[in-house]
Length: 114
Length: 114
DNA sequence: CGGCATCCCCCGTGATACTG
DNA sequence: CAGTATCACGGGGGATGCCG
Image 1 (spheres, rainbow over the protein chains, first blue to last red):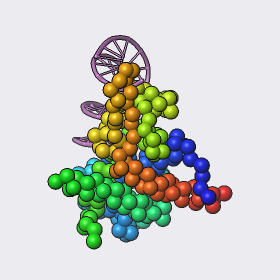
Image 2 (image 1 turned 30 degrees about the vertical axis):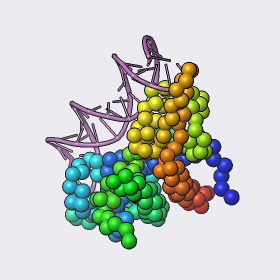
Image 3 (image 1 turned 90 degrees about the vertical axis):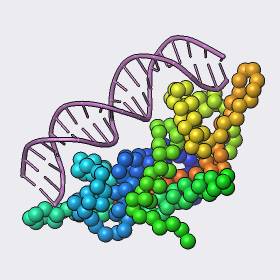
Image 4 (image 1 turned 45 degrees about the vertical axis):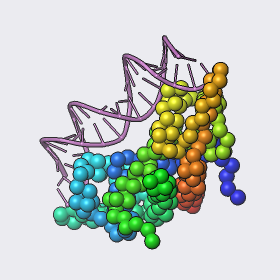
């Protein structure tokens, strides 16, 4: 059986989960990593041209602390650092997919109005 | 078949959906309305003691514009206004539940460490 | 290549007082 | 009862320059 959620406690739990996903660049970073392959810092910069280095590293670090992203440093010259998803981070994919499907429900109703 | 999402376009679509859920009080309001019954403004105030009137009305209005919340005014004295979820808003419940389950996955791994 | 430090601005949030 | 109006603050985000 599951836990007994009050409206307040459930809201708090979901809110905590949402905080991990908030931030202007988290989603675009995440979706670039959902492919499964590790990407270098510079590759992410190239993939997301409008992001600044500061924001890229900041959001990556937060997600790393949160356990969504893993960071692998290759000690060599020139430096090479790769970013990928943890298992838990990869588990976000179907969750965000359900969010996407929810968003689509709205469009369907809009089309009915036309 | 579904649509063809690029990392960028999918991230944008999910980001738009997340913006509807962002805000310090959206979740707690939402979970109080998931019950299915309409609640009066003052009932929501009572249920969420720490919220100010300004924030309560602000978040309710935003969700109303976004199509998540519906507002029904009973023209009488004293005034009576009730808030509830739209069908689309109610459809958020299973989505947030999957988010909750995702958050639980993390706790399970933490317990393994102990 | 892959960062970190600094300065600055804007907006979400909060406290308080007032109104139909 | 159900809002509106105003002021103030803190932090997220952006631009730029320097470092190992």
